[in-house]
Length: 130
Image 1: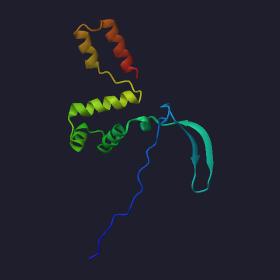
Image 2: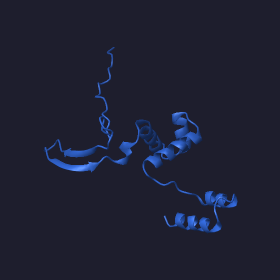
Image 3: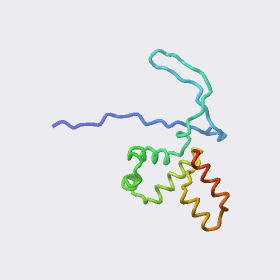
Image 4: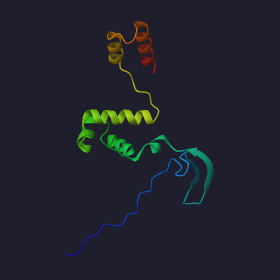
């Protein structure tokens, strides 16, 4: 019986988005085709996904693999529903996405007296125009 060995794989390189010396944003300055050696020099921003911390990148990949099912993400990561939602909120905040406000949230704030009817109407109008 022969022993099977796993092929050795190279360690996965992570895209660095911040300078390790000064902490400022890094840019992508060269793209290379290894087939024909074409090189393009430019100044491209690092895509927002790659600016997320490693743990949130892994979380997003799990979320996508689970096709957006929060319950499946809960099971796969062994975390609670509220924790999944908090991580999604963190991802959205770091990516610069404004959280979607539901009409129930707006009406709840109106009922509690946190906002006026005029402000509630404006928020509902803005929400519907997105």
